[in-house]
Length: 391
Ligand SMILES: Cc1cc2nc3c(=O)[nH]c(=O)nc-3n(C[C@H](O)[C@H](O)[C@H](O)COP(=O)(O)OP(=O)(O)OC[C@H]3O[C@@H](n4cnc5c(N)ncnc54)[C@H](O)[C@@H]3O)c2cc1C
Image 1 (cartoon, helix red, strand yellow):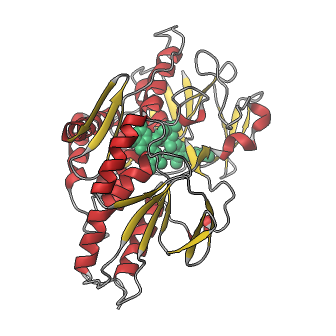
Image 2: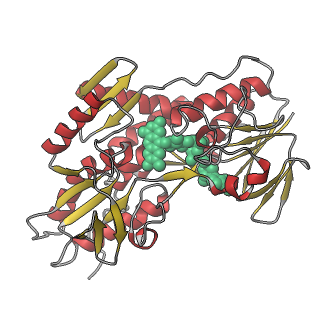
Image 3: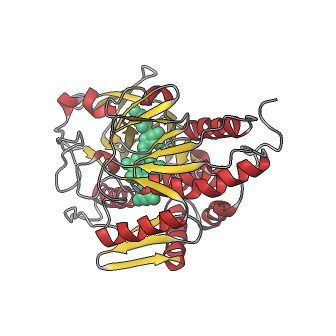
């Protein structure tokens, strides 16, 4: 059986691994990067921990598997009637069965200046840019930003803001930065932090953030970013360090091929009971209009589901299930929620650590997963130069 997968993230990689169990299957994985990105680890890498926890070469993941062929290309066009996908390279890929798992992209909701000046933590390139900026900023003899602004109080914003304190303290000491007052703030348009969790969880996290010295501004709207300020609800806050974690949108591939898909109001692909858009095109993970789309665990679950369907191992209909959510908030503290269970503190932090190990094991063999998981505690040398990056 010939199966083409587009996207080398959680959904695409997991689907390739699952489908490769059938030795009669030949899988072509088309993706635009040579690495798999473990997004839940990115905030750690952005705040001084090893990059090994955040990106893993696809070659390592598929080592020893002979029926997966990885092609580096960016899918731009689909023609369902011809059963073909076109890449930015100009190559036309014919498919028999297609799995689309292209993930989400950052959106700035058209807010002026953000695309030019804001930093992000959604990719290796964004993280390197942010870290270089922080190193440049902290190695200045004076004039360092007094306000470090994280926009968005979702899991990424909360994880990042709460880990930034320790990292910035290290940078401050390392560069003997004299600025006494550096404030980390989260700016959120909504009325509470972690709006997808319960109100009780939000309240616990708000208290924890306060203890960590993270300032939270709720019901505040980001209106513009200029070269040296963020305009928030009409008032400018002086800063060159604005980290945008707020908006995600479906991959633009789908809007560009809107005549080939039925799209929901939020731009995701409407799928049938087997996660299909048409008879031989499966759409999974962040791209599919399902209840819990937007989570890595959903993408992994979707990948297992469609693989079983494609291989004829199951005829069951898809049921969206709420996965457990666990968000780290600083060292040895996290918030965990699953159905009616809510835990906070070190116990939840241990659950998060275990969940990360399970996440890596979903993609990597046991030994490799263990190595990558352990890298979470290792400090990065490469991006923490011993000498100041600027004379
Ligand atoms: C910073 C951050 C932290 C997160 N933390 C968590 C968390 O703690 N827990 C959780 O459950 N979820 C978390 N998420 C969400 C989770 O990462 C996503 O839901 C998950 O990655 C979705 O999997 P996917 O396979 O749909 O897409 P992705 O994993 O994003 O994979 C998409 C792949 O497609 C490739 N691609 C994109 N466009 C093209 C194209 N045109 N052609 C070819 N290839 C293409 C991309 O490079 C990528 O390899 C986080 C997300 C972010 C950004």
